[in-house]
Length: 344
Ligand code: F6P
Image (cartoon, rainbow, N blue to C red; front, side):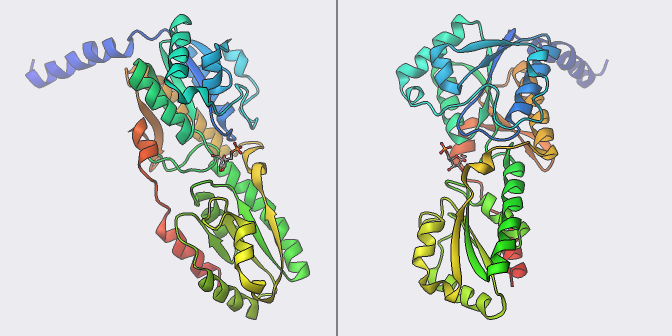
């Protein structure tokens, strides 16, 4: 047999097999940080993907906080019935201060060992992956991240689970605000979520037909905005400005205070807030969650660790966990241009 074919055969029959049936017997899954619609669909995918591969699955409640306190529950295929359509997370979530300390992480790692958990799937955002990076580095825990945050601000994936739902929720709300703005000839400052990023604001601004958008990635030029508003006022009886929560003025209220006279508009402020975090996940979020959840289990079985599974140009991708929060995903300049063309 030709050497190359022999090598291929060796790799397929021995190398892959030995990796794919590695030591994994039991895995843990948890959600952490801010909840996001579609997290439940992802938990379901992880549980069923694991069981399909003959693994046992443990759900860790309240994220890293529960890991420190040993809040572990066995999960079966039926434990995740009827949750694909539900917002929130059945595993609960938390932002853990204790886990930021080396002692907290050591306790968590000890509890994982005692429970015979060989690998973890962490569903969350940048804070979750900072914790996951440390857990993997300090305690050699096999861990795969899945991007679950409405903010869509993680490097290494085009979309995060929950983002599509959050954008749709905000747009639905703004369509309603538009009715009352038009009826009263008013300007509305609408604040959407996004602590450090303007992904939600930009997509929402374009798809709700808003007049102006202010995001943390670009410095808002107040005099330019005042001029643009004055321009709107000349031919539009009402207008909407979308303001990302993390915009450098400090959100919609602070931005409104900086704009003199609001170009003569009678104005109101509306902060959409946590309404964007709840609700039934869209089909797109459910699909992404299902795909990434199963891919995370496959990755653990292949012996991967310390990476986030994402989707880039429709294909499954892997990015070192550290890069997901140290590198910055930039907003799409073409979309920014589109917003300014269409808002005239
Ligand atoms: O990270 C998701 C997010 O919704 C941010 O957009 C927002 O700033 C933050 O969480 C709010 O967190 P909390 O629910 O803890 O107030």
